Image: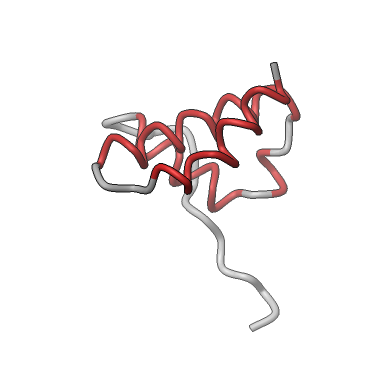
Length: 70
């Protein structure tokens, strides 16, 4: 299943991002991939924006944190 999700994500640029739904699809696939590989903590900004794209209200997560180095 994980390989199928990665294949779909890698193929999406070929089709382009011509509609809002194209980006929502990518964000949904990113969330599915996160569930399989459990890497949400490594990519907090991507996790936040994929949640934002798929949910009308987010009340349990913080937004992406600024890097403390700069």
